[in-house]
Image (cartoon, rainbow, N blue to C red; front, side, top):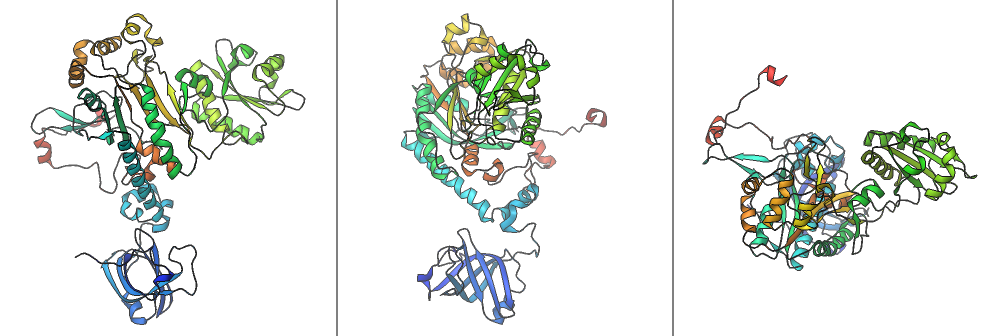
Length: 591
């Protein structure tokens, strides 16, 4: 049976007074004045309407009905004597002639108050997500998500991209995270993998003659949760272009993204094209991170030559010393101490500071160690009265990292150094092709193994691998990495040489990437692409600190779906069908 309604709960206005209407929705609450007078709030997906109960029989009919039951209300619209400017329908109310219960809520007590569900424990919210989503504030995030995805699809289509869906059962591929494996019933001992990204498929599409591809692609990675990363499943605006350079990719996203951010974001300004381009090394050296927040105007400078071996142990010879100068500094000593403490917690390394007084003398912090270097430091940094300088020292990568944390912490607190009300995009370019792995101590791909090295085959054969740059790039917004991309390595000969440097021979490449390698042997076009994370974009646009707030059915931090009870045990027959047996660890193994 289809329930009829004449209006939604946000539609009725004063002009509808006198009309007979039927509404359907959730019984949000009832304010009972007497046994024959009560004010019921009916809520649906669209809004709320007040229903006035004015007779004892109707009140009695609702006496055993719990809040959040679904109701059908038929009645007459009239003008409210006491209007509510905070409700869209606040000028009217409905006097019911009939109320039907369409779906009973069996519980008198709810796990949380619907309109305050965001204040509840997160695991409780996720277990009762169907109730959490009834909260208009939570529901609005899903509406926002839908609108943004719709706009992204239209914008990409308008740019000549064709939406193509790629498989979600494929082979395992080294993408940098753990795969979700799916055992095969028909092929004993073999497994499918859920794709960490459609990387190989979209490159094969380019080799297949597709000129411009995109999809809102589901990606699956068995990795730990973070505030800006959901475990298990996430979505990205995946795109690839044939016969394209990185500038072609940049031009598309610089056209597509800013209007979406400016139209729907909590900040109404977004960077104009072209976005700022910052080299990877420059970003680390100037901002202390490859994800700079350009709303903050602070940078770090190298003062190693000025302060090295000044008598302060962290500034000993051999260490790199980075300085963050903050002009017109207005923070208290208590605020400074908190910044230093938080920096140590986040970076793992201590920082220090000095201030410049009205007489251009260094005061506070480590000033006693710098007296003999004062003039050189003032000249090197262009210091003025009222400035404060924060320092980070140690091995180069750690000094940079600590300086980056200082910038991130100081910027929003120091007056005049943080332009919060905007979305500031930038491209980080010229990533190294290779790096030495921290754990392995061996040469590894730095960014993406399918990237084209700058200088091509000649660079791979003749240059120091650690000095080779790649056509790789990251898109960053307000200090958050939205995406990584690259000009792809479409030449089989260059691909073989690139993998040889990390210890994989031609046969290894053919075995690990058979389809893509084979496709490239038939004359693949140069191509480039990128895949901004949809979830992260919406999180930024909505101003949420947790990515789970903009995902309809997220897992918790332990990769559990508490509502559905996943992961769960399965029947023995199901295991036998896919040739799997569970071997439980004994106590010694668990120890």
